Image (cartoon, rainbow, N blue to C red; front, side, top):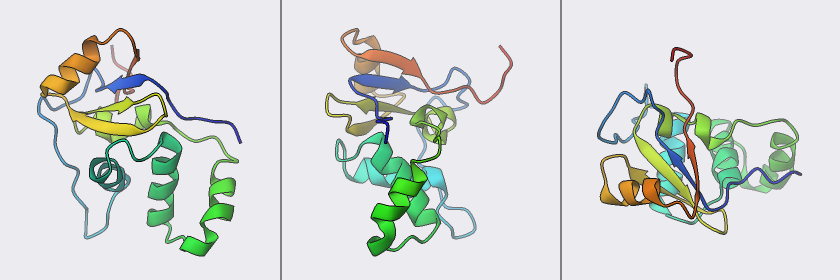
Length: 137
């Protein structure tokens, strides 16, 4: 399996993100959406998960994958191409920057926070942006 984690990277919010203050994603119709699951995982355990961990756990929760089946299901999940967290609504819609440390573990930073601004200006780490929601320039 190819490693799809980011290392020493900051994913800034998308240029067309509609919020200037980060918002916590909410469940819809009583069901946790992928952004809710991603937010909960990363915010509850800063620098505890890699991108691969979060992508798979969100998939596992949404699809009711049992703990005993996770190893096999994770292998199947990553046998197909997966969108990275640059495509996540956390950075596209909700105003959360995602910092990946040297081990590939992540933490969230609100777009309005001083920590976000510091990470955005840190030239010792790779700077990328969340993907735009629209194709318009």
